[in-house]
Image (cartoon, rainbow, N blue to C red; front, side, top):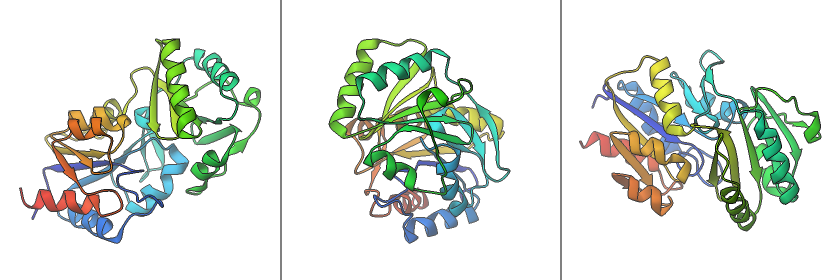
Length: 267
């Protein structure tokens, strides 16, 4: 079975990765079969350059990845940004509001390759423990004020519920606010999402005339799933993602990518 006309892009956490952050052997074998037979494979993730690097290296990605939830496109084969968007200066003041209102939240500011951690908790420590990261721990006021790509608040799910509610009441117009996981809330550049980032990647990599398959599990995957020829949800996905998808496969702990490739082989 050849996949010369197919591109598969998948979310990382909750889709490609198991709950304990592994790629299952069956999924890896399916990806290898897919690529060896002409398919193009990459990831779209909320992770930044550093946190996504170990995954990109394990997968031996040969086409660029969408990172920062669509705010950047990075070529891991050549170790360079192809494109990135930046937050407006107003994001600094917005973050001050969130930090004052939610003092228990872990706080990350992502700028280029750097991860600045200005406040932490157990959820934040779990998050940065994955991959070869060396976060810069500092006070908020010590973070350089330019070229922020995104900011991240990390806390208990019920506290993120409150952050989402607070954010909706602020009605901020010059940034994009998204809950990217049960314990994650992000401020992104206006218009940034995995769908727009994926379109940018296709343009920069000059990839055309491919049947697009996109898989995910959370609301930050919606735009990418909706733009695909075949949108796929894992069975552990949120209901809104399942409703947007054309295909539902097994959960992320049971070989979701293997199921997707198996489906494609049967088309």
